[in-house]
Length: 142
Image 1 (spheres, rainbow, N blue to C red):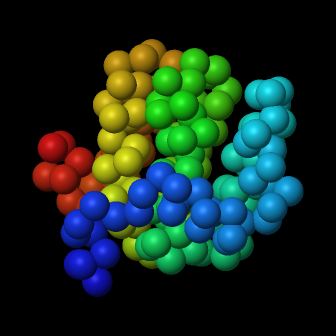
Image 2 (cartoon, rainbow, N blue to C red):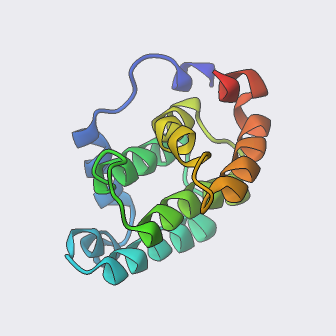
């Protein structure tokens, strides 16, 4: 399965298409609403489906890329949405046996940025330790 982690992976467009096919359409539609509270419901819906369906590596990578896109390439400033983005990755680590390096890589810029933010430090540090179990400590450190 190592080849799942090599190469460039899914494009943003491919990832969005896979997410739209896999997850409940009403959940995905919430990410296009203007109200951040509705977007939070979308995150919660994805997290629930991750828990119940335990998606494969391709869907996990697609989910990470979809979240990045919906978080404006990690430039989203709403604290509630940032918490849910972290919560979605955490849910992947709790419910899935395997987490592809590509999914972790997609999140890496966001986690690196947020580890220094006092509002997120504890949750990001805990998540990074958990991620090390999935992709090795060296990969997380790099």
